[in-house]
Image 1 (cartoon, one colour):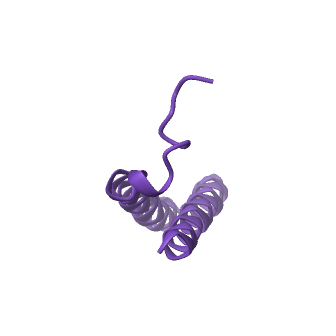
Image 2 (cartoon, one colour):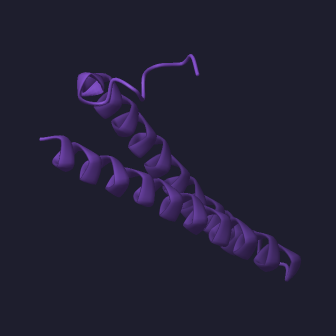
Length: 82
């Protein structure tokens, strides 16, 4: 079970990193599009960026829940004292 939980945690972390990277790409595109004078195009790009930020936040919540649910599998990870 520990291996499956680790795999799920890694997959969630990878998804978070990807969603944040995509959000940055779309925000950057929005800046460029707005600089070219297309406000509606920039708004669309910001909307897509927001979608990716929300997905990243959802995955962060899933990762936190996974950590809480399976913290007994990883007792060292919950130890805050060095």
